[in-house]
Image 1 (cartoon, rainbow, N blue to C red):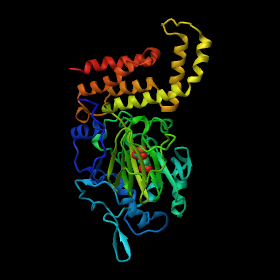
Image 2: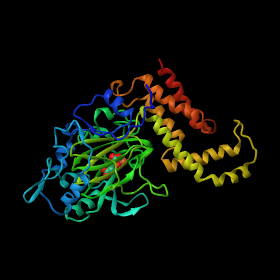
Image 3: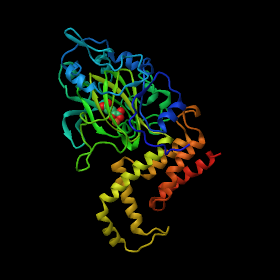
Image 4: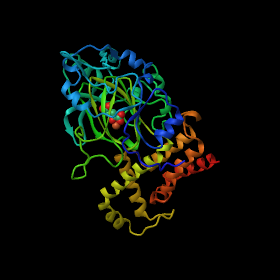
Length: 433
Ligand SMILES: O=C(O)CCC(=O)C(=O)O
Ligand SMILES: [Fe+2]
């Protein structure tokens, strides 16, 4: 099996599955790195869908959907589904009947009373009128404060993003009554399924998020942390996604990512309430809430993604090298030709460690963290063997990253990372037939 499958071009139609076996997920999506949707069947038993929703009724103000004209324009070129979903007319465009517009599948309304159970949790709140670099300005508040604003019809531009609900509840086992990730996504090397998290890990080592905000709030163009995948489920409302395969993301003349791509040609996906979207590794995306939305998303990766995650870390590393190239002459001048007992020259050892520290700050992890994650997931796989690739395929994916790492200067220059990578190598030798 090869991880070097050609990068997908925009599919003409978007696969939408009522059923999806792990093998089909692996071969049709994980390895080729292509998007798809799971139908609302996959979330219908979740507590969140029962408890966080109220039945649809026409609304004005904060709970209203985008207006009819905007909706028609935005939805005019969404990707067709394959097969057309049995759960919704295809696509769910507005149908005008006499004086009012209705939708094939009207979205629910949020049940704020159910969310007040989490009112004391501190959540990041983005103000979607205040751009700050490539994101919106954010602050942190108890969820209760935002719910109170929304209940009084205020805070229309506020978007609660990256709320670590699962971590706040003390881990995946405690969140089972709220939702359970679809089985094909359980081989998760980033947030292993049911570990216990401390509250301090909530903001750093947890990649399971809840998002909620009124129609019109949005997430600007970005790709996900570490080159991970995302799966994202709509509990309340519908979202519109603009998706760009790696290398096709639109940039300005300074090579900076565009912030808002709603007028750029893209693979546009209308995600209905209850549906789950899979966003492949390295695909840039922008997301617009068409109605008041609540969604749950996990970032994750597994062995087939390792070559891509490795490449993402390598590219962050290269940016760090370029960013601090000017300090190298100082380090060399200070340490001269001194050689350490292990054979490294003192300047190259220091340079490598300074770089690795910067990489940890910029990318969220360095080489030792990367190899520790690989080792831990090899030794303790997050799922049974029916929900992950066969051992020799896992070995192949890991080897692809390992061979590249062994050819890089860091293999020699970072002894702590090398020790962990060597454990990985020993482990996969045992996996090979
Ligand atoms: O729903 C959103 O606003 C953003 C979601 C997202 O970026 C993701 O799931 O990766
Ligand atoms: Fe994302």
